[in-house]
Amino acid sequence: MNYAKENIQKAIYTDIIGGNQNLVSGSISVANVTYSSDGENYNVDSYYPQASILENGVNGFTVNLGDISNTIIVDYSTKATDGGLSQQYENRGELTGENIEKQVVEVHTPNNGGNGNASMKLSISGEKTWIDENNARGLRPSFISIELYRNGEKVDSRDVTAKENWKYSFTDLDKYDESGKLYDYDVKEVPVSNYTSQQEGYNFINTIIPVKEETPEKPDQSITTPSSSSQVMSVSSSSMESEPSEELPKMGDSPRDFFKVLGILLLISGGLGMIYIRRKSKI
Image: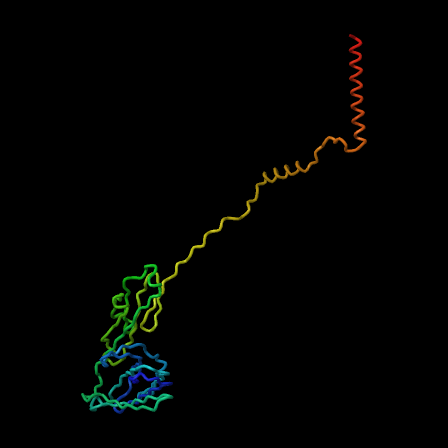
């Protein structure tokens, strides 16, 4: 639906199952798709969550699409209740929105016995985005590996390189198993060294892990406690320096001291004179 890719606000799709058939519970799949240039094949861009799908018993279902602007594929399975005797099996689809007129489309299976088991295929594609400053550190690998899983089991893989612009695709995939139940497909990327990976739908974004800058160690600034012996020596030295030294009195400290010194000198000189006179008289 919405092959013209018109903007539709609050779109709701309702499907009513025709007679002689019942809806197979859990078989409904709703996807945003992009058609190829030939208008026949398409790639699935993303799926609507199951929470947006409301089954109305075996007679039909409703899908809350929200605001849409792209092409949507609705796919499901029914089971014939008349043993496949009918020439055709019909259903009625109705698309409504706030800004469009109600559109009703009636669909029937091909007139080939009415078993409704026409083969359905799909494709899954995606791309890789690198966030590493154009491989500035030269750590980008030459290829990555994308693995395809169906119902949780790995069924295929692709090696993706720069030659394909880091794009990949899985084509011609079966949509249903033999019992008519819808396959659940998923893709995973094999982890890439030196990068973190983020998955958005079928696309992957790899961001290079930044280099941790090493912080230089700071020199030891702790104060060394001196030993007990050096402390004693320091105290002794300090004590010695602090003791007052005995100094001779300086001349002129006071008049009294001056006369004492003068008297002593006179006595000494007088004594020397008397000794000299005595020695001379003896001669």
